Length: 126
Image 1: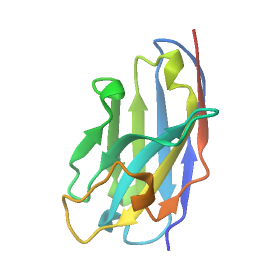
Image 2 (image 1 turned 135 degrees about the vertical axis):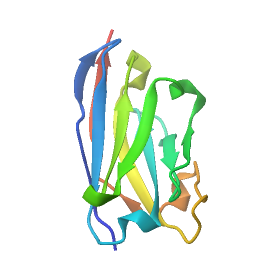
Image 3 (image 1 turned 135 degrees about the horizontal axis):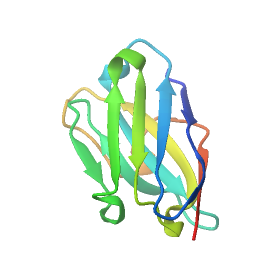
Image 4 (image 1 turned 90 degrees about the vertical axis):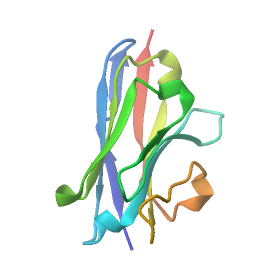
């Protein structure tokens, strides 16, 4: 069982930056593939970025070059550095985890992940 707690959301002007963090409980954090998703009002939860056990990274096209996903296994935490933020990035951001037997496994499908955080709100003003 893994519990995930996100932090770091807030209100920022367009062009600004935020760094989201997702702290995980448990002693086997390095065994998990991790992901970030976001959900805007009235829309479905959408993939943002993923990090395999082997630290391969994957991004949705709309955030490539602006967002960076990373992990600190010693702190059982993943991060989402978000730069050059746009109003269309406004959403609740969720981290997700799935225990993975393979270092390269990842997914952009929300249903693939077993554990979710409660979300943190990011609002980008124009």
